[in-house]
Length: 245
Image (cartoon, rainbow, N blue to C red):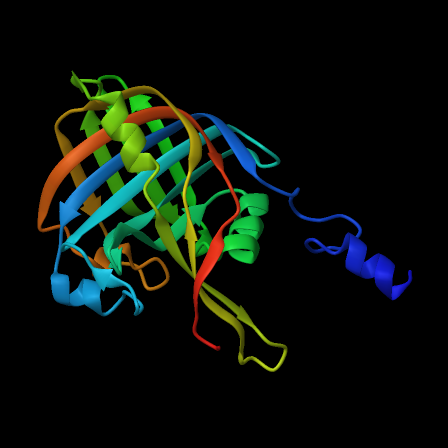
């Protein structure tokens, strides 16, 4: 294979059979359980990379079921998002994510810099309760619950919230172990169609784990609980700050 052929084909690894297809990526019937809670602001500040700044001392703990996603199939995801400011812009810094499917783990880390690790999240309806769980190394580290569809929410407000900017810290090492890429990346979901949104009573229980430290941001007070069904597109991102420049 000539050098120009390598360059023309190079998209992701392995070269002859990439772990994921090129984007953008469409999601159909994507289902969220988002529990927003108040936590320790000093602990949040220690985790937010400059030039991002803390917007408010809260965390959005998300459980997401994705039954129909381009190139990735059916998988589940769970993680923590922190409201932040980038200059005059507000959005969410994605702190950590746990998935049960390799292609979106590889694509998320390599393309955008999503902080993804292998875990076992689940989102399901159990009798009258919407329940999200996250297991890591066969240990339950998070359980979120909500009364199922107690009150409908305004779809336009939910659409605006889903379309807000999100920020990622993308890190790729050089072969000598030093950082080759260290960038702040922004992305916004597009082509959003909210099929339904509800709220209800909610609760969140987090447990300590050395390799899945979700409980390091303790739950001081649950502020809101939201259940969303939507179709949307995840486009490619943009670099807004290069730490190595």
